[in-house]
Length: 241
Ligand code: GLP
Image (cartoon, rainbow, N blue to C red):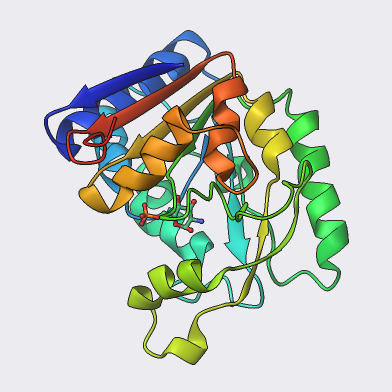
């Protein structure tokens, strides 16, 4: 595990974008695992900048997102489909058919989860996985519990996650209670994982994930067992280390 602490979130984003960019330059048909939430937005901004500068070509890149809410229309402004279009896909030359997210509106969500894992496997696996971290150390929507789930699945969101997501929705009752998420298998099988965390509100989750015991109660702590993981942190997120 490598832990890099930067002065500010902009440097975290630059570092993450450099690592993703070098992957795409080395392997133009790279498979990227992408994340939503506020943490990766500046990184996507940097990648768009590199694309516009003619440095990066996304025409052969393939992407798989971590998760999507259940039963939220994909054109809803809070859906992760909408988020990814707004923050990245609409601004680079990635073909729409190369971008995948779980379909949270599939009639049978269990099949959708199985299909999603199969599609990741068929792609040859994820080269670089971007991750944020929840306040309770969830990754994707793998919430703390007695055990972690290996495969993609439907996750019941915890009250703390529902509360954290509340800021994006008009009313509390509109915040989805479930999501389809990749499991720990997809994350642990990624050849490289970049976990981005910024801000003091992430310091406890970061501390427990890096310094605590590996436990399903702290989902990101499983990354201690990953052979190629980089934590990219700003000073505030790293303050308890
Ligand atoms: C959501 C996403 C996670 C993300 C987390 C933290 O729960 N499913 O992938 O890491 O939010 O979001 P933020 O970066 O906005 O704090």
